[in-house]
Length: 147
Image (cartoon, rainbow, N blue to C red):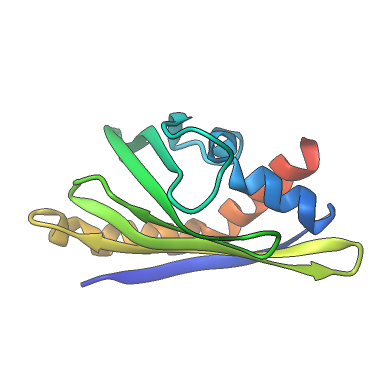
């Protein structure tokens, strides 16, 4: 069974600047402590088909993750799918951006899904992600505003 989590935050930066920061997946470690390293594995600027490979640490366990951008509509929308095979994956996720006064409102979401034994862990991962979603959004805000 899959489940969704997410949050919304207003960032004190223009929408184009926020979009560019989020589109560069190599910025993820600046706001996500679980991302230990990440690299773009495809050529060219970010867009539909761009792939990012990462090493993450969840609940003390390191895993390799790979995400492919599936929708890319500057400066308002980014979507991805996880293509790696792990016990719990994010088959769908994204950012929606819209102007908010002098800043930008960002809404992010991810869908988590368990596979095999991961079906047992997915509800716990989802509960933890939902609990930390607002803090994660605040971390995105702090990272973008510091850049």
